[in-house]
Image (tube, rainbow over all chains, first blue to last red; front, side, top):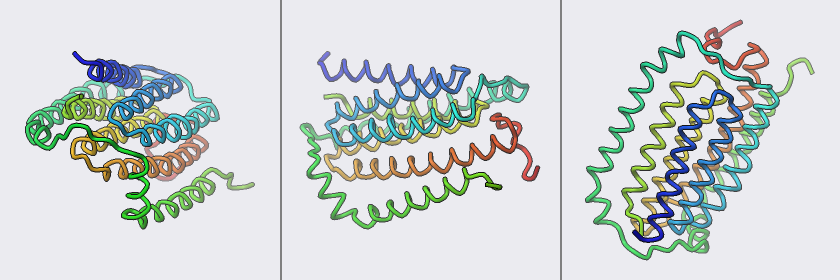
Length: 167
Length: 100
């Protein structure tokens, strides 16, 4: 067993543990911290695949900005432990088998397509950030500019939604 | 070198766990976090294919997905604040009326 494979399994175990913890924790702040573990482990996996810029963005934007926003809202609303009701028991009985079935279906589809993926696999793939920048600012420059409009509209929407009506 | 289908299977598992969390949890903030988990699972598949095909387009898509997720989080959390202010509850079962 070589070193990248060991690193992969350690990070994958961190991801899956964090995701299961996200489901099982009763308090939203514990779920948010579990999700941060998943995101940091995913950033490690991106580094393992040689996508260092995506890994940095994952930590800065996902682990930093988005999760801070989540924790900020949880603390602002003073969210407590979620209550259990009859409907939530029903969701447990019906939802978990359905979710596991979906997971199995996806994994089976991946396993079936294994030959195709392996045929396309080339070793020594490197992803220099410079090449990524050329692609982003030349071939994908119009979508990139459009995302700035998207962010502007999202900022406006968040301000309009969160302001008090009689202020 | 880790085989590509290992990453894809991990991506499928994470996506499935996100779906389970989405169905199982009752707190609207946790449901929103499970959507983020599913987006992350898809990002992992994008980067894995990008590495397997030795093309960088997948990583550009990941950057766009992260931007859209950030915008979605900002607007979605605004909606959650409004819901919590109007209903005094974060339980999705109490959000069952269009008009109070």
